Image (cartoon, rainbow, N blue to C red):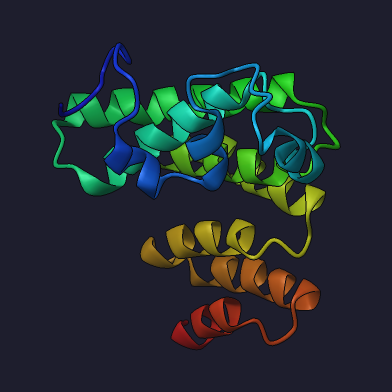
Length: 177
């Protein structure tokens, strides 16, 4: 149990319960063709042969959000999560409906790793691929707000509100600044 720095164990039932639905179905079966295979191919395209990388990256992000970790372990997991998401970005077709999410999580990991230029680029790419994907606005805006970069945050939020007028998450942040 505990932190899986080397990924030598399977996902626990508790981890799977907190991960995206696709991970519950495909984990451990990269060529998944089970009862929900057709469903996942209809929703996410043909990503199943690579989705275990997504699930491992999401598990790393789960660890980072829920565990007390040494700074060197946090750094390792941020870097590893970013690497798993970049694997998905590179190995799944650019028009795949999950690409905005891959870019979002890549940006989140890069932001927390301290690579802010790459994080900003990733959030922009997520928004470009899916302009109405509100987390791609709020993740970066939250960072900007927390660093008192209010004018930049306002610009990102207003860009989001052009795509999603009145969206509660975006409106709440605009009111905060």
